[in-house]
Amino acid sequence: MSNTLDGKVVLVTGASSGIGEATALALSQEGARVAVGARRTDRLATLAEKAPGDVLTLELDVTDQESVRAAIAATVERFGALDVLVNNAGIMLTGPILGADTAEWTRMVETNLLGSMYTVHAALPHLLASRGAVVQISSTSGRTASAGGGVYAATKFGINAFSESLRQELTANGLRVVVIEPGFVATELASHITDSMMQAAAQQMASSMRTLEPEDIAAAVCYAIAQPDHVAVNEILVRPTDQTH
Ligand code: NDP
Image (cartoon, rainbow, N blue to C red; front, side, top):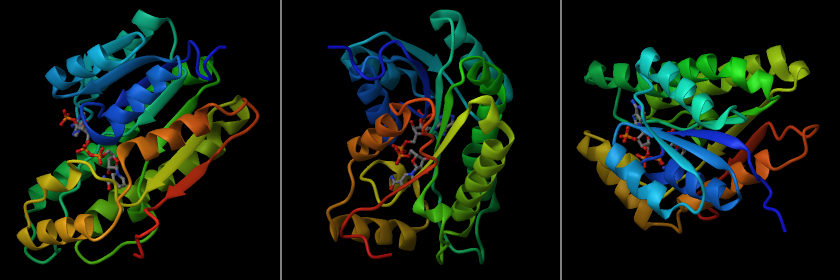
């Protein structure tokens, strides 16, 4: 029996940990040929060893347009096409607006928003050639903002806005745009928060509920892109059952 994603070429950004890593592994298990990008290439090498299929590891910094263009080019050179971009790389440096270290705002906007837009821009000619798909890893923070999460939410609202424009511009050309909005997933994302109150709040949240696992989001990605070409799953919101807000 053939796997659902047999032969599809998928690039996953931010694949060195968490959701990106789990997604790359799940895609490989479903028969996709997977290119994985991130800055920590040692972790990508370990992932490639674990994956059952063909995996290309790429040193990638999504804030650097040259690096993004090189990663797309290397993927197409190796596999001959690009069918799906999973735009996942992101950071979450939450904290109150008053007195914030604005360097953290710059890093979030450059990584989560500009980085994801650069990657779509560079991948589009190939995705159109294959009538492929873009999977945008947004967040519940792309739907509702909360105290301490203003800038992170702004980047995710931005991703949702960009995705809807992209969909309207190119769905008639066969491009499918999928926005995935996870609630709390157990990954290292919150461990990089520098604000001690927000760090403690994230830890408290994690211990107060059955969180999602990265594999739960990987399953949503696989579901969306395994649909037939005429079915565009444009939005998936996945929260832990125990998450109220
Ligand atoms: P992780 O911290 O485990 O993964 C983040 C990934 O992004 C890492 O692989 C990291 O790799 C990569 N990354 C960060 N900066 C860059 C960069 N400049 N260039 C390339 N890659 C980069 O967190 P998650 O798996 O949780 O996060 C993945 C996505 O899911 C993010 O967009 C996040 O906002 C989103 N999300 C997560 C939720 C959660 O609760 N965990 C909830 C909703 C959305 P490296 O450092 O090696 O470059």
